Length: 376
Image (cartoon, rainbow, N blue to C red):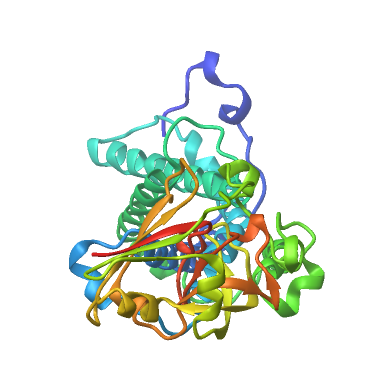
């Protein structure tokens, strides 16, 4: 390989810049297996979350409301695997970064394309993990929409990963099995990486895994802290719903439209359901909800079984002020227009006077401060 010009023989280009024996294929392959598993799990669970939040029309009839904890589990795994991937990416890049300073930068057109693909893979993966981590903090210091950008970055990262695996398949195959000679430094390094992954997982997973809640030291949410024992993402003050009109009445639009005040809603048959609030940021918490079945409210309006419903909130702005609930959820006996939580009347932050709670549904679609149900 030709030597770089003398003017460039500095920093990582200087002779003997990389001396660690761990900059070798076997260590890279082991870390690549772990990282690939984390990224694929993160991608698949993220894809499921995207479908549940914004399903294409052709998929709506096939949505499911069971198991009731389904979204809690899959979105919890999404955030857990994404956080676990961060130290894995750092370790993986450390083992291969000498390759980034090869000279010449591109030997052939194919070599240049391969390096371009690696650059795209690394950039998409780092941006995906960075924006996802900040989303768990509800911090968006960028001008682009998070959810759509995160979705397409996921496809770029996974596509780049599959192309990279195909290009490196012979090298991966040669180093897949454990070599006869064990490198002591490799074992220590992989043990340290495992400990780092375990530490960040154990100290953040408690926001969605109940039996790890006492170790929830680094996660931005504690599932048992908040008004009425539940966290809140969007408060009534932020939504402009601290004061509910004294003449508030729920409007139900359908073949036989009607309106009901809070006392009249309380006079209808009341049902209880223990369901989680599971948010895209990765936290979730179960509560006991009491209210009127949405299916009963729609039936009173003359809606046939299998009707979807459009839900409108009192808040004046926000991407989820108006949401649509497919028939699979509207017909479910566990889907409630909740008036109480854990035996108490809803506070303003939890959606007073009434909110939606449904099984296996993202938290952003569990509309608070409901003012209208419309059969569609």
